[in-house]
Image (cartoon, rainbow, N blue to C red; front, side):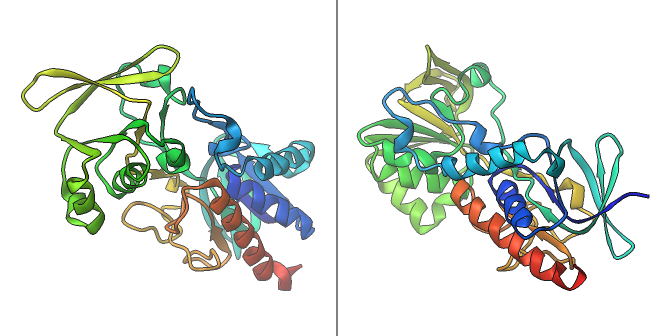
Length: 304
C-alpha cells in the first residue's frame, strides 16, 4: 500500500521551491516532484554591457530554498508527472515511470513553456543576447536597440516597457490586432518604435552574442536588423496537461485560481506561471508559492 503524503507539490521552480520549504516548516509530510530544481531561474540572459546585480531575479531566495531541498533528499523526487486524479477523498499522482503517489492535497507549480521560433541560430544564441523575458531586462536598455518578436499582449507590453528607455525598438509581428488598445495606439505613434508586420524570421545572427535578425519582408526581400538584444515574446504555454481533466482551465490552458491559490477542486492548489494570476516574474512566483502552501496548510489542518 502506498504511503499517504499530506501534500505533494509538483514543480521545482520559484513557486514550487517556496511552497515546499513553507510546507516543511509547517512539519507537513511533503514531497516535491519535479524534473529539476530552480525552474526558469536556471536560465540567465547574458548581455555584454551588464552585470548580474543589475537584474532583479530573486535568485538569492530561490537558491537558498533550492539548497535546502538538495540537502533534504527525502522531500524531493526528480521525475516528470503524467497525471493527477482524485482517489479515495485524496489524490493520486502518477509519474512518468508509472509510479503512483498518494496525497491529501496537491499544489501545482509546473510553470509554463516558452514558444520558440524554430529558426537557424536560435538555439546557439539562446540566453546569449536572445532571451524570452524582456520585462526582466527592460531597465537595462537605456539608449539601446532591441527587437521584440510576438503578436499578443505579452509582446506589446514588452515593447511598451522597452520603448520608455530604449533608443529604438523593433516589433516583429504577423498581425496588428493588439494595436487597437491604448498602449498599442501609443506605440504605433512612437518615433522610437517600428512595427515590422508580416516579416518572416529567417535567422538569428551574431558572434558570442546575438547581434542581428535576418528577415524576409512582405515583398520577399531579405533584410537584416541589428540590435543589442532580442526577445521572443510569444504566449507562454502552461504545463497544465496533467490536470486538464481535473481542474478548470482558462482559454489559454492556465489553471484558474482564486486569491488564495485554490483551484476549482477542493484540496488542489496552484501557483506561479501555470495559473491565470499575474506572474511571469520569479519574485511574484515566490510569493504565490508561499500563499499556496499556507492555503494548503489551512485546508490540511483538520486532518493532521
